[in-house]
Length: 342
Ligand code: 5AD
Ligand code: FES
Image 1 (cartoon, rainbow, N blue to C red):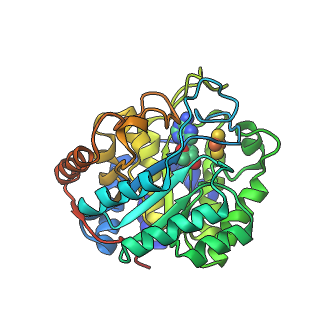
Image 2 (cartoon, rainbow, N blue to C red; image 1 turned 90 degrees about the vertical axis):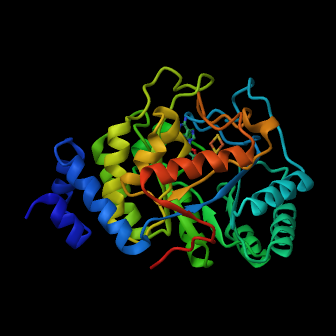
């Protein structure tokens, strides 16, 4: 049986077979077709929206790839007030969004009390939306409070599942074991969990991607965020090359075949390295898009990597632009919470 057929029916391969798939463009078109077939079996032509609110670009960490790292004195920092955040939600709700993702750097200004108050307020105003948090590594007791306040989902990319590569991308105060512990804690508390990694990050080899797949098979997350690495001018990785479009699309298709049910975003980073990147992502197995809902005046400041798209458009324009893109790719936006279909 050929490799793609085997992956499609068994949802798994041996290490050697995964490495063979990853290392050549030979299977790309069959992979894409199989991935699209599997996504349509579970989700039809539906694409879910996640309204992304980037509410702070302060961060206490210093990840070598990230533009909002604490060690970047040139980052122009901002924090949104509760009122500003709720305003974004109102705008998003009017546009039909039923999921809000509150994403930020690891910013101690937002205490557990503040986060819980935000979550409760959003849930009170919009009882039928899902609230997703993406605010980094916390104590399990903090995650428990967020859950208690009504948060439904949590996004925390593992970034890489290999110890050697993790310490190449991060300073020594950050550890892969703690990162993983956070993800298991979140699962244990009943969050719908998203993990994921960058494609083509400095030092990444195919064996690391294989380890990422193996880790995801263990974790069984509801969502998997995968986008290309893109250098940022104020980081130690400023001269590194960006991740490739082809490899990112290949990995999206492989991930769809391993996890037919999973929520798989076609990321802004993918749309940044190619004009039709997000359309291609959808055609390679992705079924989620995350339009930006942050206030336009702050968008440029949430600069994780250079050249990030969607920083000048009003939220309504982003929605219209994405609707057209989703349609032209052959899919349809649905305005519901977009829960995972297991
Ligand atoms: N290029 C691409 N993605 C990046 N991220 C952070 N920095 C970069 C970069 N330079 C991703 C990380 C993080 C997510 C919010 O953004 O994977 O988890
Ligand atoms: Fe903020 Fe890495 S620089 S989490």
